[in-house]
Amino acid sequence: MTSSEPLPLADRGVLAVALTGTAEALVDVASGLWEVVPSDGSRAQALLDGSLGDSPFADVTMSLAAASDELSAFAWILGGDGAYGPSLGSLLRSCVETLGRAWWLITAEDAAVLAHRAALLALNEAGYLASNDAEAAIRREDGELRRLRGSEISDEAERKFEEVRVAGLSARAPGYRKLAVDLLDAVDSPNSGRDYSTMSGASHGERTTLAAFGNARPGQTGLARGGLDLPINVANLFIWILLESVHRVMTTLFDMWGESSDELRRRWNTAHDDTVQIVAPTFDRLMR
Image 1 (cartoon, rainbow, N blue to C red):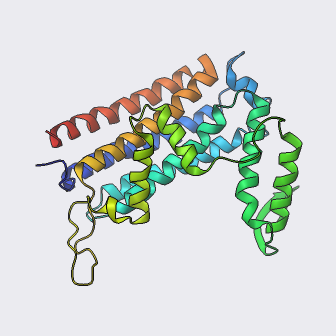
Image 2 (cartoon, helix red, strand yellow):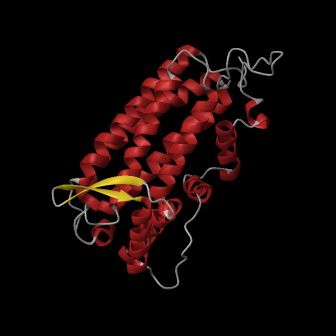
């Protein structure tokens, strides 16, 4: 077997179970962390500057919730019996971008920079709503549901950013490529730009990327017969990116919380190590 052949179904099932365990641990441990009071003098205590719910740090919880959803979906599709290589690339890209968003926030130097970054992201994300007078969201305020127009959301985001804006810091939010590549650099990816391009190429259906996807058999219409499987070498890249990206974010959070998170760190490390002990020998065997 060569590393360019499709990842065998039996191995996909084994890897999917392992990744599902990591996704479940992410939900369990991250949820537990938000309930733990940061240690005195810790970075988290300084960044939170009060309760978690009232802090811009709440954006990190949302990013981790989305990442756990994407990781679970990746595992579910990987373990299925269809050929869905491009879909796995799309999910990987989404997950790394989501984690990159969290990474940018948790690496803020202090509470003021965190507030600036969170508000800037919200402003950037609300920008497309500026001219939208249609109903765009529903919010509960004082026990009542309030319907918000897109322009209201955009105006509110702009006001919030101006309230917390830090002089001298950029007023332009980084793009998702930048957020993802910065996280890949943090996990010591040997070529973060190339790795991001590979997952993006799969996501966008780029021919130069998908040409490497196992069992594409062009028919007269030019469509692939039998689907586009995930080659062993690409699966190896994708899964290690997933595992190392989420592990880097989680270990940084534990470092931020200090000793009060030691039990949660132990639980996370156990779950992560259990997955690695399945993934590593599987690919060692397949890529000989």
